[in-house]
Structure formats: C-alpha cells, structure tokens
Length: 384
Image (cartoon, rainbow, N blue to C red; front, side, top):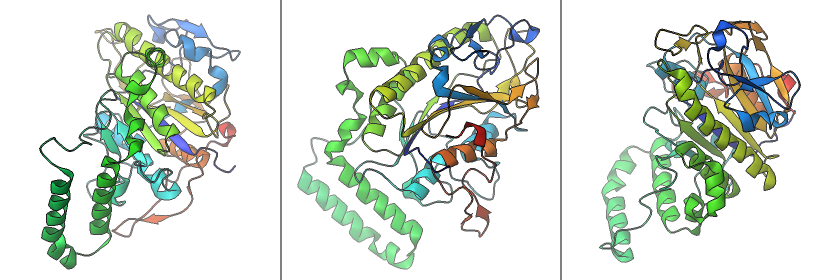
C-alpha cells in the first residue's frame, strides 16, 4: 500500500519496557507476578492493568507481540531500535527521523523537520546523512525551544555584525574545504537564524494550550512531551520523538509500574484521542517502541532482568489497521511462538506506512549501501 502517514510521533520507552506487564500479559502463570490484567475492547485481547484507557482504545492500535533481537544491552539495543542497524565503530547510521526528513522532505519551511523531546546525549542523530537532518533536541517540553531570543545587551544590528564577522572568518576555511558537509552546516546556521525571528516558534510553547488540555495529558514529562508533539504535528514538523526513561526495572518493578504504566496510559491515550478530534490521526503514525523486553522470571529484588528474546511494540494511526495483535509469545512470554518480527521488519513497516522508499539503496560516504528500515520485511497484515 502507498504511505498514508505524513507525520510520525515516535514514543520511545527507554530502558526496556516489560511486555509482560503492559501489552502481553500471561494471566494465571508465574510469569505474571503482581500485575493484573484488563480486557480490551477487542475480544480476546488483554493488556496489563495499568493501561486502562489504552484498553478502551484497542480498536485504534495494533500490537506486535513477537519482536525479537539478540541485543540485550541498553546502548546497543537503543541504537538498533532507532536505526535498524547494529552499532559498529566504523560508521554511524541515521536514526529513523533523519531518514524520514531525508526521503520525505520537510513540511514547514520555518520549523525543523525532526525534533527529539528528551535526553539526546546518546542519540545516533543524522548518522552519515547531512547535519541539517539531525533532530533538534528539547530536554524539557515545558521550556520549549530555548535560546531563541537575543539577550538584552545584544541589539539586532550588533547581532547582524557578529554574523557578518563570523562569515568573514570562515570564508577561507569554506574555500579550502568545499563540500556537502560544509554546505549543510552553513544551511543549518542560516535556518537557525531565520527561526529565531519566526512567529512559528509559538508551536513550541505549550503554555498557550488551555489548562484543561495540559491536565488531560498529565503533569509529567511524557504527557507534556506528547502535547508538544501534537502541537508540532499541527505546525508541520515531520518527525517527533518523545523519550521516557526509567523502564530498567531490576528492582521493585511492580511498584514502579504503577507510575510508569499510568503515565504511558494517560499520555498515549490522550494523544490518540486528541489527534483524532483534530482530524490528524488519519495522517499521523504513532509508534510506541522500546529496545527489548524483561524476563518472565521475577528476580530476588522483585524486578525483571534484560530479555531480548521477545517483546512488544505498538503502532497506531495513519497506515495501520487497528484492533489486532500480530504474532505471539509462548505461554511464559519467553520466546516468540509465531511470526517472529525483527527490528528491521518493524522499522521497515514504519517506513512503508509513511511511504518512504524502503527498497531503495542509499550509499554512505564509505560506499556501503543501506536501506531505510534496515532491509526488513514489512508486516503487511497490519498495514492499511
């Protein structure tokens, strides 16, 4: 099918979200532990008890329960999920957001095409693509895009003089090292200066939203990040990633799940409802991802350890047929029981839903070919 998603909101649950306590519970087994289950609106499909609102929206989402990987370390697992390629020293691969803007182009002429709401310290960014495709990082959604106003002591004329001076200082360097990388950095600086004086910056200011709307999303980073993501979609930002850490629950998982599961449930459910109410869900793909799962066995600290064998991720909105589960784990949630899905398969499915050229080969500077999504096989059963 042709791509239907014009925008992508990518919710990344960093630290490895437990599939058994969220989207793939095993009631009646020792694997389930203290987390209860709840019946969704889709017959026969259960979620963990903390996902009450999402269970009422199950007809809008598709759960992939048979994701599997060999990577059980956080840094490497996060990199693999964001890029669809294994982390190696010889090259840095582009994250999905950079691929999206590279292949689909920007929507807004004023705003960046790729935004990361969260901690971007270990994000692969644009990889080997041009620097202007890197995500613009926002650590705190409530502060929005910071440092966009000149300080009081710097007049507009002085600011222009400084830019002119910087341009003259760089002139010889640019003459000696002409090329795409230098041009890309210069373009990035020009866009930053133009953005500083743009009215479009209002899109980053969630304080302009009614208090009732801000409260509905939740008074926490994930909720306010999802609200900002919706505002950015409205304003023409192609790809927005919202990150929530804290899912590495080796201790007291069942206590922590109440808070993290509740935040996820409130933020994602409100986001889906809000996008639909504004007529944006048919053109926006919402992805919920994590780097791997957690062990069926509960450890001595009432937590679960790393488990790359099987885990769950979720797709909803544009290009996705909701109300279903694809694949399955076994009775204990340890291994895929049917239709195993690689991370490349999952990322390729996202690419197809958005109409990205997933079969085309792109050459890195070292001449090696790469594909958007990692050359996986799309899950046609969940594509609309």
